[in-house]
Length: 143
Image 1: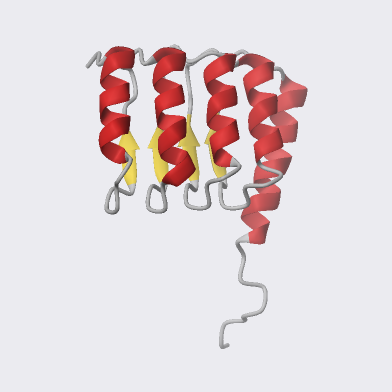
Image 2: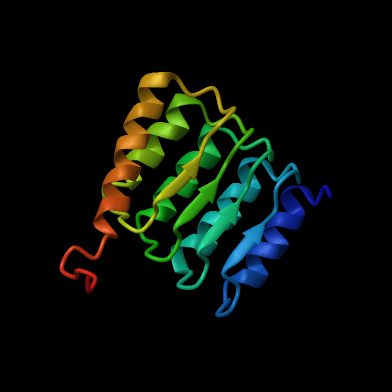
């Protein structure tokens, strides 16, 4: 698989009107920042996509920032896989900021992205807060 940025733009274009796809994996396709930007447009509008894997795609901080901006508007995605890219601290910080507005995203994998430990700790705290917000605290199971 190596669809590149052009293939990512084509797939993202087809996903604009998606009402059924809940999981999408385009890992290992060298989509780069251009492809990440295309999928950011999908995230801005999607109400059905729950899991998106963009791992090992040569995405840098710029692509991470585009995805983060889209996540501020998205209320459907619960898991974003970005392993093996090159987001660095800048891209990770953008995602942390997006989690202030997005309370549905509970899983983000940034392994192998050159993100320093303190930044990863802040990301973990933001994700833990989001996961806790998903707990049905008003309900208790019958014993």
